[in-house]
Length: 114
Image (cartoon, rainbow, N blue to C red; front, top):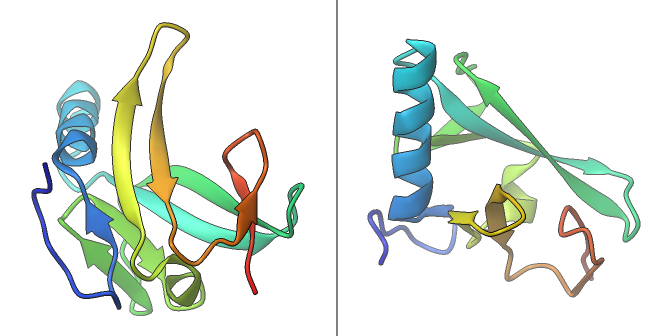
């Protein structure tokens, strides 16, 4: 189920990701905490996601669902992506489903584009 809906120029944040950010905010006592997603060159497939918890929002940042933030440079690589949070037997993680990626690697943090 999606909590926030956006156009393809945006990032979709699923309810699972929002809830996890809210849990982290409560645990750390930081009301402005968000998941920052940055796209950088490198990784197995050409580009890689860098995920970090961040309280700062800069002038060139875009905030989605009050839970996810990315910068102007990363946004074109993330347009239309869906961010979720999944719990599993081995661990838990934020996941990015990116319609712009033409291939990825097994680690899930690296992708390539046309």
